[in-house]
Image (cartoon, rainbow, N blue to C red):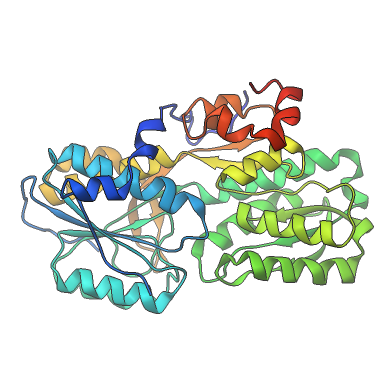
Length: 378
């Protein structure tokens, strides 16, 4: 398998089955998880295992957050603290105002550290500053929040866009110069969106015509389907040679819109997150590819960073934050950047199956049995 790497480091292969199977409910029974309802460089005093880590995730439409990131993160905190550490968890369900309230509540409860995957990177800045003033470190997770964050853990997001764009160019081949494509970008309030777009445009520039491009508020599949209908009306279904979709939720909506418009063959459509339904669409050929990002690596390393920061384990913390990214103010922020892989029909077994994200039986349900057999997935 030929896979993109970051700084020459290959993607870590590890079994996710156990981690993904650990539910928040089970951990709560062990006293590890507390939940808040939905709807810089701080220097805390070193603590032992009895710590509280705040985890703020942005939405439930993106399947990975509830299915993988949250339980994996919680399990790793428990492991690192001998079962004594607590994760105070909240999901904003795509509302910046809800996330701000959740963040304030965590500061009021004097958690030891907060990890935030911001719904809106700019809107959350006052809460990051409030935590800083309270002596609570903040780690930006998956998306780079504004304000005095202590560290950042994510992926090389420009590389994500490059991988998506390169996939489309490969699919179009010699027809690229005479082809028209549609770009379905993510939420402009998400700083990753600009990086994804920049990476994709580097691959498209002067090589293919972008007929229509849309930003998608809150990454909403409903909004993406509406925009795709507009694109079909403006460009013509038969004239759309490919669709750059920044993530899997929107990819599914884009494909649905084309089917409803009468498409009998779906042109290449990209995605991101390796959601189960997206992997199944890749198997069937409806979706051309998705970007697989190791949830285990990202969530596990984020938990390690949080615990090491609170416990004052500087050597271990510094070893994890060996990269840097530039914040909006130009400040260099210590970071961990996890590599990404282009998932296609050719490498499903070597990626999400090998890592234990999904079993073959989960992917190859009766509806996809024939397609799985055709690509040797059994």
